Amino acid sequence: MLLGYISRLSFVLALGEAQKINDKNTPFRDPAYDSQYGSQIGNGVYLVAKPGGWRETRGRTNYHCVFKADEDKFDDAAKAWVPSPYWGQGEASIAQYIRNFDEEPDETVRISYIDGYGEVLQMLIPTKMVNADTLDIFAKCFPSKADLIEYEAATVDWTDWNLYGEPGEPTW
Image 1: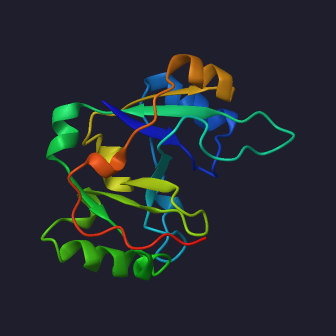
Image 2 (image 1 turned 60 degrees about the horizontal axis):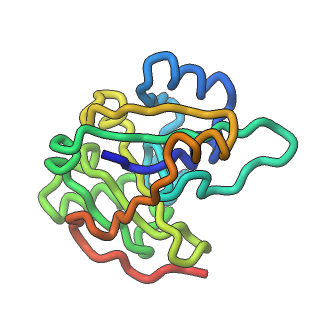
Image 3 (image 1 turned 90 degrees about the vertical axis):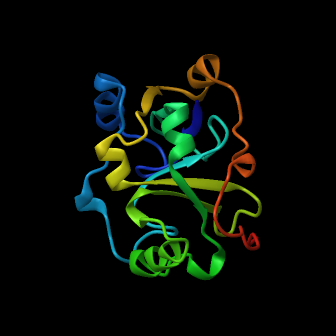
């Protein structure tokens, strides 16, 4: 089942990160990068819904990755909208919001609009889920957007999924 496309480990991947993903075809997240305050909807791996759907860094090779998961495991996983009042409020605030749905924050996939980008959505797979391979994720990285699109070109409609909460309003 297609989940999405990497948009962050600095939005595009450095060669070393892409090689590590391709060596085992699984993603990873160093918990040392996690912060109580430094991200929009929490700590983990951020994805976008369409291939090459995030800006590239000019003047260097940009790596683009596709993420797929075991459909049954993903269907069983909790998924929640994170509306704008929680954006950038830190992991503790977002975790409490998710606990309101009687779900474990470290085991709940999160989706929100990207702050300042209108109706463009992002998905976060929490660090714990990524590193425990809870969703049996397959990941593959490519040295160009064209190579990625040749391999996988579908756009994922995350709004079709069974999500807790409401999306809130996008910001422009």
